[in-house]
Structures are given as C-alpha cells and as structure tokens.
Image (cartoon, rainbow, N blue to C red; front, side):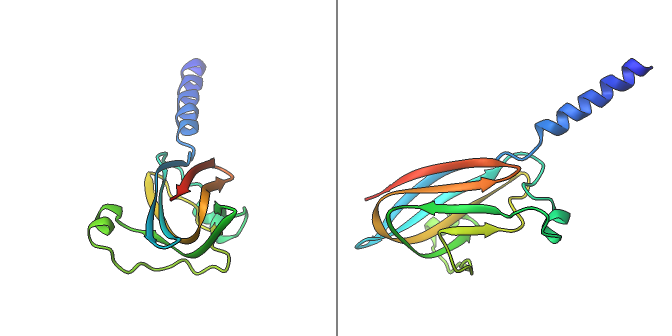
Length: 150
C-alpha cells in the first residue's frame, strides 16, 4: 500500500508543478496615430491554473508586485490602459480606464496575472526607434517583446 500511496502523491505533485504560472506574450503591434505618436498593443497571458501572485500574498504585500516595463531610448509614455476585448476595440474604439500610476514605463501589478487568463495592454507613446515591453514576475518568469516604431 505504501507504493500505491507514494505513486498517487507523486502524480499529484507533478501535476501541481506543471500548473505553476508561466507568463507568455502574444501579438505585439505598433500603430501610428499621428506624427510621432503610436498606439502599442501587447497581449499578455498566463495559460496555467496558478496565478502569478496568490490572493492572500497580495493582500498582505508579502512579495513584490509583477512589473510591466516599457523600455525605449527615445520614447515617452503618454498613457497606458488595459483593453477588455481587443477584437471589439479594433472595430469600435472606446474609452478605457487608464492606469493611474506615476511611472507608466514601470507599471506595478499588485495582484499579478490570474490563472488561465489573457489581457491586452495598450500604450500611447511619443517617440521613435525600438521599444521593448517586458513582463517580470517572480513566480511566472520574465518575458519580453520588441517592437519597432515606424
């Protein structure tokens, strides 16, 4: 019976480990709005079950928040917001709630990324050159996408 018990425990542990958070970045696009102003949209997802920050950990500020970082030499962030439905937004742009933080090049996500979800971040930037959007999470890893503003 010990062998069977250990086998079930091992199977559960391996399944649980396979569902730990893993951040992925999908499409990243830059669209010229006017002059040197661009709209950047980047898809971010966590296809695993476990969130990058557990709710109890977020409530008690035990770990640092996940970070969404925009890097670029000649780029200034005008605004940033989350898009609920990217496909609907493309057809009919609507007002979005902007992210209310002082430094929009380094957005802190105190609740992280929930499990089995995806979101789209939209930046309105002014500038030129290459831009890198990076998602940095203690539990979900670090991923990045580069975009050329043209």
